[in-house]
Amino acid sequence: MKKTSSLLRVLVVTTLATLFFAPLHAAPAGPGDWSKVRLFGHAFRNDDYTPEQYNFIRDNFHIFTVEKRHAKSVYGATSTEKSAAATATKLLKNNPKMRVLLYWSTNTAYDRYYTTVRDVVAKHPDWVEEVRKGTVRWTYPDDTARNWWADTADQLVKDSDLNGIFGDGVPGANARGQLKSVESCLKRLSSFVIYNGYRVQSASKCSSGASTLAHANGVYCEAFFRSSVETPDEGAKLMEELLAIPSDKYILCRGSGDGAFGSTHDFSLACYLIIANDYSFYSWGGAKNSYAADDSLIYRSDDFGKEIGKPLEKATKSGYAYHRKFEHCTVDVNLKTKTSSIVWKQSSQK
Image 1: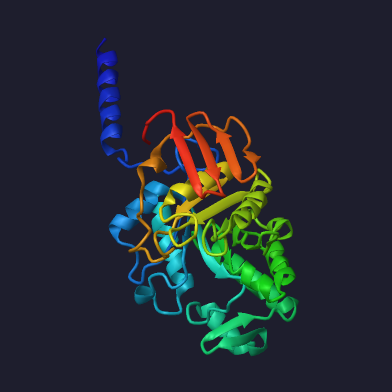
Image 2: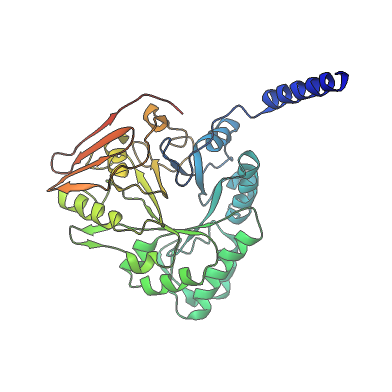
């Protein structure tokens, strides 16, 4: 009896201690979680993120990209590699389940922000061309240049707590006739990689599609119902391309208030839910699509926490109107009238 009482006391004390010291913060939704909107973060701050911002990142983002030039006043102007690695360590200490990505351009040689790029541009000036003073583009003249780009990005991930690569600038590379070279680089990468991405060029054409996505884990759609998407037909082309993405690929959609389809997140969130799969994530860039952490990073809306529930059907389309049902909400989008509706069946908050 005495032993039983002692064991009971130990159990009670242990349970209370666990509850007392357990982290009192929210957990972001990851792949396959339909309990709330899955959010993706992407931001920089010259002086590193504030404690409040680090906590917000921990609580809201399962995937996060450390933008180029982040914390340059701490680590130096050309030390994006070092600052990204150090930031990944801090982020993963707060949330070990996060996936933190290194920003690494496929199109522009940012020698102002990366020591590795600065050194290789100095050593191999024939690898780049100057577009305007201070801005140089990769020319990918041979396999040596392409392999350097991929191997360096891979090595930066392997040597740090970073666990993936964000390859920026694919639409720009495509516009310059360099898409095949970019795809060769992506194919060589052994890291988890998201590239930017699907961009509508017209109502009948996208800048990069299935051939590029075949060499990556997923795509970032930076122009999600903003910038180049201005007409109903362009919107329909974007939806068509995103709905065709294989269900095992990541889709990261970034809306903002600078587009033709609304100044708040409501419309783009509805569009996101129409195309969402188990690996889709949403991001809101604010009124001007800013990547500065003091601007849009900690934007939060109540509907981000509402329970979506699993999809009950694939999206249906009638003309410019899209419709989709989930366990806890119904979504409608009309590209012609530029209107949307998300009807929540319950108001549970996560």
